[in-house]
Image (cartoon, rainbow, N blue to C red; front, side, top):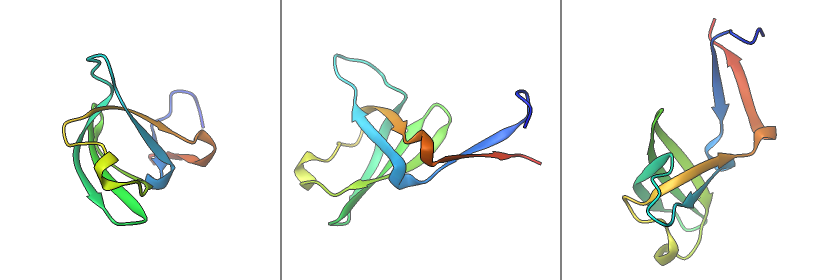
Length: 86
C-alpha cells in the first residue's frame, strides 16, 4: 500500500483502552454511555473522528467512567489492521 493511499483502520473494541483526562484536559473523546455486563463494560465514546465502541474488562461499576468524562483513547497496535478502501 502506498503512503498516500486511502485506508481504514480496524481495531476490535476489546483492544482499545480508555483513560480519564485529568487537570481539565479535553482528551480525544468523551464517554457518551457505559453499559455494565458483569465481565465487561461497554463504552460509547464520541471522538473527533466519530463514535466508537470500547469493551473493557469489568470493574466495580462504581469505578466505571461516568458519562461526559473526557478520555484519551489507545489501542494495541499489534492487533490493529489497515484495510485499503478500494
